[in-house]
Length: 352
Image (cartoon, rainbow, N blue to C red; front, side):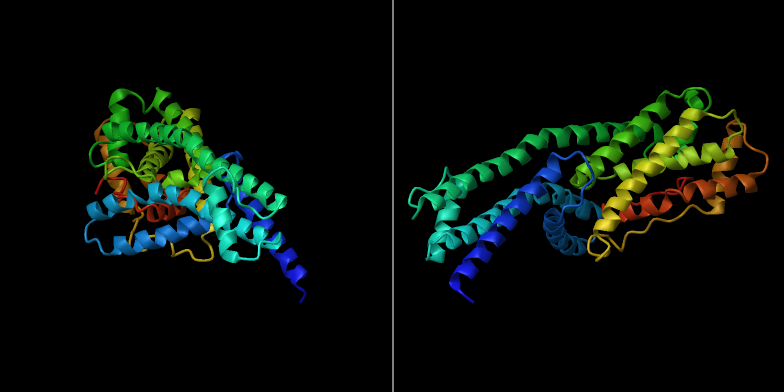
């Protein structure tokens, strides 16, 4: 094959690599849609393999949690390194295609341009022009990530504010039963939709931020016993128990919150599940188990409602069947996300 054809293919391949990397950065942080970006997936999966291996050596959840708290930040720092490395390699191919014979010199030109303001010792005006474009792209990629860090941490703070407030209401054990009892004591169970409206807004924001900025799902709560997945499970379980068991007039706000929660958790679940379908066990903590509530757990909550003077539907078997149907709308997504994020062990609705 003639040499000029090799150089042409090298130029095309380098340009393709550069354009793909820049588009990956744009799709990651600027495009307001839930895009699965191959370059990012490979980078995060590689880092996760290492963290999964190190986590398997830890014999307590507290140690695993402390270790996994570093996964999302390190994965985020790794992302621009991968982007810059791919851009640098793409320009190495272009410099060679444009006539620079020494591949080591191509590497030096690319590295110099990427980390400074362009190469001054280029062999031709075309190589010099491309080196300045590389300098601009390198600066752009780094600036892009840095500029979006405040947005990410603002979304993280808003998420964790609700998680912390939920712990105050659901108690240290953080069960759906405890949350329902608190709602009953404060009047929010039957005639106050303020709490449910706030949780609806929280679910809507989770759906938007955790699919457009998926790394947010792996940022762990400041306290090791908290988790946004656990919080979502408690709110949805509480709503399912109320809708299935409490004898009251139809409450549109609770229904809206439950629907928003099911939509949010399932869309986040589908985003990650589709991205990891080729190797679903590569990211998921297979040792983590999430037990479905049993009929005995449900009846325990049902009896607790009766004991606290809450009007319940007379047929508790029918209520149990209705609860199971409601729970089936989000159970698979909750279980998958709990394993994916290595959430704390989640108690049953009765708090056992």
